[in-house]
Image 1: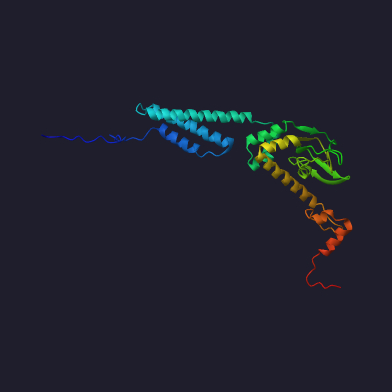
Image 2: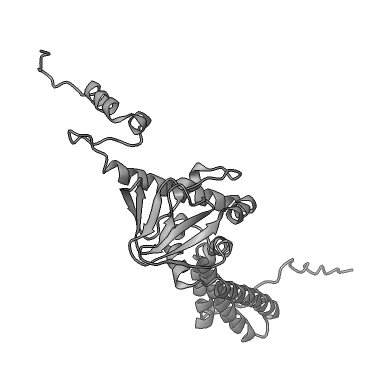
Length: 289
């Protein structure tokens, strides 16, 4: 009795015949587009770049799979991925259109917030907190009067120049994209109230943006990231103002003082001169009389 044993079928289908020619240009174009798409960065524009290239790449893959009737699964998967990427790209475009700002706020974002990596979404919350209003000061109009004006907001100058004085003496100027009241803001706690110790008036027509204290503190409570960003730019602005004052601080002999040193800041004139004499460095080789 002769028995014939049939070989078991392979677990995976074998390739009966290799293609001699390469795949069509559509197949290669799809893979190139997918490669370029995965090189996209972060942020709204990076995501838009990513999903735009993926959408076109998966569309080319879908068209290539459609040309071969034996690749039904490949066609369905590529078509599903094409639909998902197209939906995501359209959603990002919609978000970008809803996050467009006026020219003044765009300049504010580019000059102060963009370099810190603040997203358009977070900047939109900052703009909403200011009610999107740009205020105007005519030439000679006062923004704050020493000893009278309450500290109830935080403001950034957009255009023009502000003249700052104390007891009638000139301190410094405030230029566009600098805070008008950063020292006053940083000197008070959220529950405290205070008044300006300097006078600010416009040298020419000025435009500025203002955030009310209570509304801005509510924003900080909800978004700690925005609170850290404001703390950084406000204290950086204060530092710039201190350095500008240091450049103007001289004694009678013409020596410059560093206003960051508290003993120099608070000493009376005669004591300041005596302190300077004590801190003088003797010249080598010079003998005391």
